[in-house]
Image 1: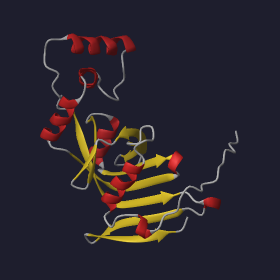
Image 2: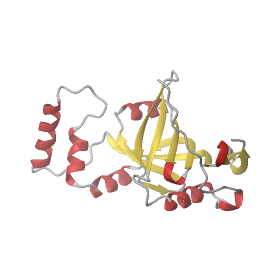
Image 3: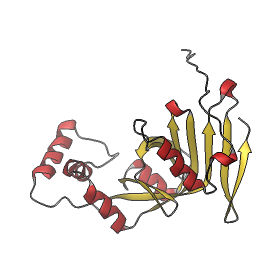
Image 4: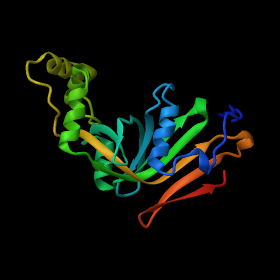
Length: 206
């Protein structure tokens, strides 16, 4: 099968002066510009285990605090198990309508129990019940079994408290690349990279 879909990128350009001096401020700047796009806070998260096997999935950014990108998941999920073995991860945002992409490499560490509790308690009861009922990434007996556990949790009298296996991660970047599509694939790429505790900036060829 051949796929020949192709379009020219011609909406914008990118140079150093178009971005704040801080990489995370620049990330927030582009997120704000994308906030009318569908699922603008969704990003592709890549993780790998000790033997180098890589897996990826889409997750939702839930905040940026102290220079870290925050997302939440089940710690026993595949991503959680891989982060436990190798906490170096990669995150990619892509907004096709804006012809923009951000690539981030960094280290993922668990958020505090208080941070995870606060976010879990802010979720609708249905989402909390689903997180408790689902043993994420485990083999399922059946859809009916999952739905029964969910309904039991949702209709039960007990408080829907965050399970210990569920919580947040913060990604602390050491590499952030901003990509702007340009005509003829002569795309703009501006990189922030941490070196000896300081951020340096440079341009990459397309």
